[in-house]
Image (cartoon, rainbow, N blue to C red; front, side):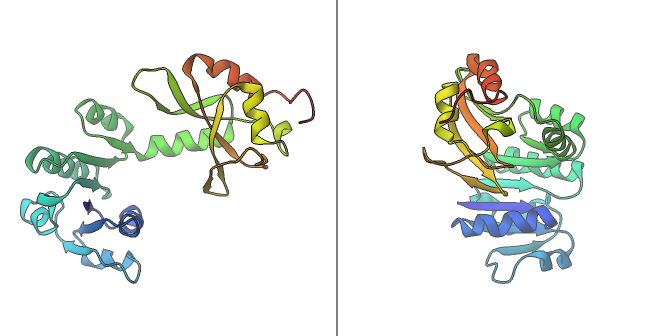
Length: 221
């Protein structure tokens, strides 16, 4: 699909080649033409200098055929205006805006503009690493029955098989985050120091699963 990105800062310059490597066409907009120097050599997408919520600029970037739009400039107001123009004027369905002010992010979420609140996300991730307790929800299915969550695992489980965690908890380990990479475990995969464990479970079982993961295993497995 075709994706238009507004903002060629660190986020935009990372997002654009990542999308391109997945086979999508990309156009990236920035007011400062020098910003495009952040893009890696070999980037084949289109670079469009200009204001990201200007209709002519958006059209030059191919917004009329775009299936997705990301507003990731450094300005909250610019990001929201651009996101609304992309959705309301050009009918782009998949729209997201980066917002620094968490209060604003909540307001725009209620208005139907998906947002990533940079400050809140960073604070939540920091707290998660400082106080790794319980389960942090990452997704809930529409029926409210199934939950994907990052669940803290006590160090006593390090060196144990993922299958032992599943057997003890009755939950399914969907994947591990290990050294910044996602790992889909097999039954023989061992839990390593520093692993973040992402679990699929019934919502009603969350407290029990969290308790199992925070308790030392009862026997050798």
